[in-house]
Image 1: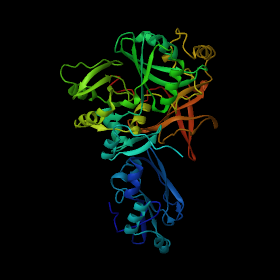
Image 2: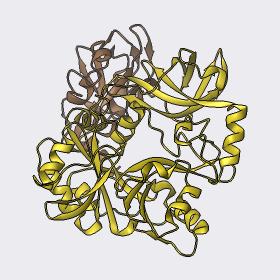
Image 3: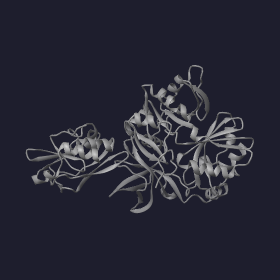
Length: 127
Length: 365
């Protein structure tokens, strides 16, 4: 499937969408498909600092565990706690209800390092 | 440089179903189709079919067959004197260590069929051949046979429909011939999921036909090795390679029930008697690990000290928690003992429990 063009993507398969200066972060459809049915998600807490490129949590399926890598930096202002009880939301709606954390964008230049949907689709095909 | 992976007769079927294929014991095998958890629930609630054609089938025939197998296997074949009956059994080396766990079926007069683990196919056959007397027939049927497991509360009804109204299903741990939609087959009422069901032996060339006939039932879901592992661990069935290997004896593995105390003369018997008398130093314990997934190799701790490592570990879709087995010192293998598992950087509490982890299945009813 073509990934939505309303956002940008990292090489680690996270997406970022910015609204009113706040970046929402989640994982792509490709990522959730690779993982399989998600059973546990380990997310940071409100107030934790994200540093672009660093690991900020873990997502686990029956057969695999993946680290989550921060695509942008900032202080977490909101965490999707609904994922605690329903981690499978990441599979069913990775670009919507499966969002993970929100951080106010501290450095807009960090978005330049991320890929457009078109480039991301090409990236995952080549990989 | 590794050789190319072997393909089962159902390889193209798996690709057509969009299966995710992985290497296992030198074979390309489907780990999942729709998803491990979905397939797991389908087996517990309805019926799943598994391609287990990678497993080994050996046929033993002759006047010396019973004596030969009594020497090679721990369980007493006099318990399966009845034609068509079968038993779970173990093959040990002279040190009393496990070569494999397998099922032996008394398929005919003077004849037995052994179904063994794919990972031990070559070792098992070489070991049997090495010890076989001249006058018995020992044939490796694996290449020309396929094996399809149908497991779940609907399994027997579905197979019964394919076999026709005249056919009577064998009882648990029995095997019987059937004509399944024009495919001649041996239907064994055995399985590795904890559900009622069968394992069907047929000609390799007939496998795709039989597979598609089974899939034509709406209640049937194709299930892969991923679900096979979550299903078997939920009911406490061991996996050779994880829970047993050539360094493990059956007593430590909790398989003493497959090694009758009063049977002698089988390879490994003396060592088993010694271990029984002394008591095993370590035992395979079952661990409940809430909120995290324990995986093979992870350290198991007691009061901060490493006492063992996870042998089998996974997520239980039925219980929605982590489950595992681990060899720990016998004193710590008591039900209720509090241990912990090191899961990446976290120390997660774990409790020793009785198996099966899941006890209400179509088999236990």
